[in-house]
Image (cartoon, rainbow, N blue to C red; front, side, top):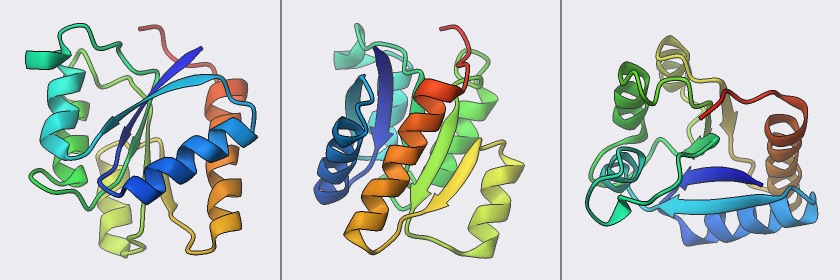
Length: 140
């Protein structure tokens, strides 16, 4: 079983992602943080997240309330305890500057969310298939 942290403020996208992993038969435990500050508290096991599992993979939206995904990515990659967790940006932004910055901050993959429902489910299923079946994840 693989632990995934999805940092996403859109409940519709969260639900679709859960369905896509289920349809792809990807065994996982999906935790959700609705904003960047909550994501960092969860990752650092602060406050109500003292017993939160360390995720094997992070799915990160860039456009988040309170602390942007760009800021979250930067903080994770500067933290020696968190920096080796693979991060896949899954966002609506196809902005070249966002893509460049994400890779400069050492994101593992950048995916622009497809607007077509079936395509979105296929893409998320492919992410799950690659990162949770084909790739070897770093030890926790």
